[in-house]
Image (cartoon, rainbow, N blue to C red; front, side, top):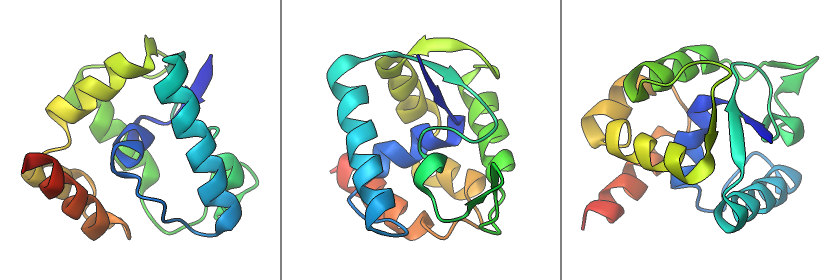
Length: 129
């Protein structure tokens, strides 16, 4: 079982090898590979998860990036119809996020102040071609 912030389902879908630092990027690659290869159950949590563990903004088990990560989590849960602490297979969660959240207009509303938004929008546009 892997604990995963709901909004990280959006981030993973757009991950292109960029990140805060090398340690973060390597951890993200490892997590994405494991999720895609093994399709494990994930528990949707609105607190630090396996991705946050290597983020330089994770201080005392909280996000100090200045971004509104809890807002992103709640929006993702609302749009997908899932709830906090729900356990679901990764690929089922990924598919629902792609269907309900990863649309140009929706992601702009959810991630309004995210520093990675432009990269995500480029990735969303590539998948639509």
